Length: 170
Image (cartoon, one colour):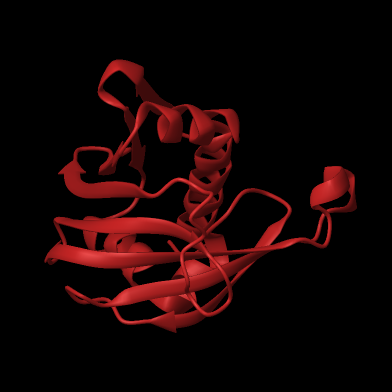
């Protein structure tokens, strides 16, 4: 697996994840912007993702659930968590920005959980496609809560699953 670079900037309430995937920018972009593709790799190991709604355009959104199907994950086993991404800006094949929320199955935001702004960039490199994800939190508390929830480990496992999918479809 490729190495993921993580920059934790607590002072600026920002997390940055960077990784080079051994695939074309078009292929990596498609994995992030196609509902069927997202369902194959999104989420940490031991979780399955189901896409309920998807409209990839400015003002559109992704509403999805993740269900833990790994009995070794203790209390998480059998739990389903919902989330919604609302797309704000899309620069086809280069970048997109969205608001990310924890929600219920109808897409209603859970006010007790942090909301974040995420900016994604896709850049061609000699080794494939560099994906950069910059997450900006509205408050220090939201930053700390999300880091404590294991977001770094979760993104690492999720991006490992993406790399595995890209390798299978090469």
